[in-house]
Length: 261
Image (tube, rainbow, N blue to C red; front, side, top):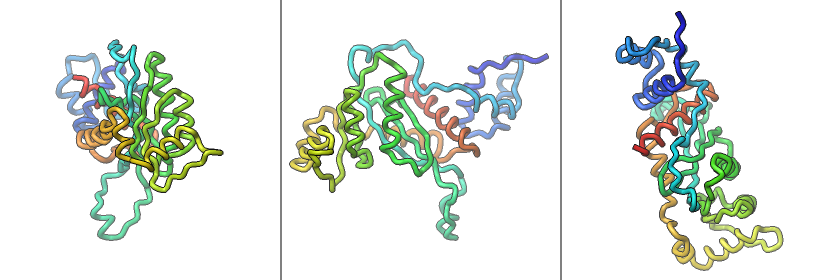
């Protein structure tokens, strides 16, 4: 007799696999040990693998807490690298082996007040940070119409560009982006918001930082990256790219649930 296995139960197994760094066979083993006789059917490791990678996982919690309904939120954006193998850096340095597989690039937008990941985009190492920013912001805007983005922090000069400042200004978001050291002002073709930011930072960088409320909270995104890597490791177990993306979304979802406790 075939028993229906709910997506919620598979999501729980996915969380256990990610947190305890388990292969799929061991995930089946602990499920057999702890859930046998308590659920109608125990899926095998192949079913667990297939079903987890097909789940529609939401990074944001579906709670009904609307504490930010009547005020704007502040987000910090940055990216980090995740290894796609656990081969070890020592072997590559010892034998001068060039890593041909590259790495994953994780772009995230973090709510600086709640420290939750509210948007994530996974790409390869060739995608520039500035190319991923519009997608992150669009995902936040579309996910909840009642949320108003007030300011966006980005310490990395990779986000400095007229297109980025223009996009944020068109969406009513104050860009708090540290420009490049060699940034120049272009009054004819440049964006007015970027020109004013370059002018202010060139005149007195510390004064510009002091004029922005909560500028020091831009480093919260780095704390989120540290938490993710300490909890789940600096690499992914999956082999296929689509499964790697699903694994990182699963880890981000679990991170948000854990800090909500």
